[in-house]
Picture 1 (tube, rainbow, N blue to C red):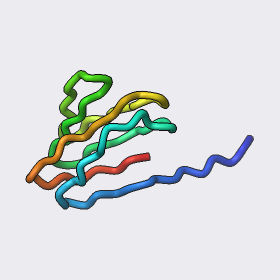
Picture 2: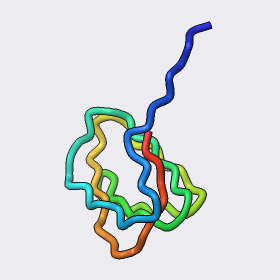
Picture 3: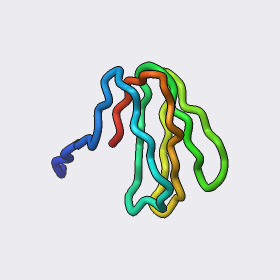
Picture 4: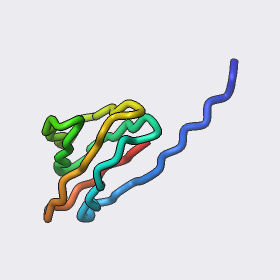
Length: 77
């Protein structure tokens, strides 16, 4: 069996999430929201991700995360 290394690119711990500028992402993004709320525009559709939710955004998707003044705890892989 192959060994799988699991890496995360960001763990935002109860801080204001940074805004994500519009970009067609060159990778798959999997984000788990532990606490709080994130709001994305995914290919023009607004999607709210709340505590306990997971969002998968595939390679090539146009992704924007809206700026918020609320804190969130989330992990992005």
